[in-house]
Amino acid sequence: MREGARGVGGGERARLERVLVDDVRTLTYRTQHLAHAFAEQQAMHPTDVEAMVHVMQAETDGEPLTAGGLAEALGLSSAATTSVVDRLERAGHVQRERPATDRRRVHLRITESATGVAGAFFGPLGQRAGVLMEGFSTAELAAVHRFMEGFSAAMEDVERAHRGR
Image 1 (cartoon, helix red, strand yellow):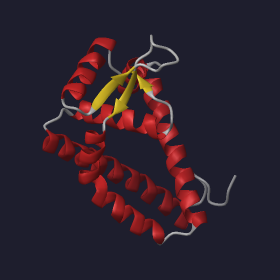
Image 2 (cartoon, one colour):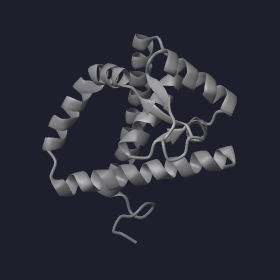
Image 3 (spheres, helix red, strand yellow):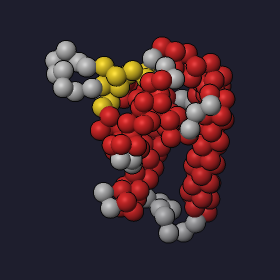
């Protein structure tokens, strides 16, 4: 066990652990508020914004998302997910695409229009984040990444346990 690990001793490490949890909580609600502001500006439902984020992330990861994958990510039924995709498609934010390798599958793709709208809204945040990260060493950024990745996985595990998945 590491020096000052959870439940042992206290001091600076215990304080930092509390502060980190508080920081994650703050980041979570600020993220939600920003996503809601984007949804309001675009006259979208917050679930549609979340769906757009999942489609964008899948493309960034090089693994196009299917409607079934989106339904799982959103925790929605296939019928509800179809409604979300239909709204996003009508708004010009996503398009359905059949890959040449398997015409039975349908991949969801983010449109250039959606990328432009999201970039205009979130671009200033990206710029500020870039400036902020310049103040960290590569090792510090790696440590932050390791923490965020681990915390995110813990949240996903707890959510799945609560949902019985």
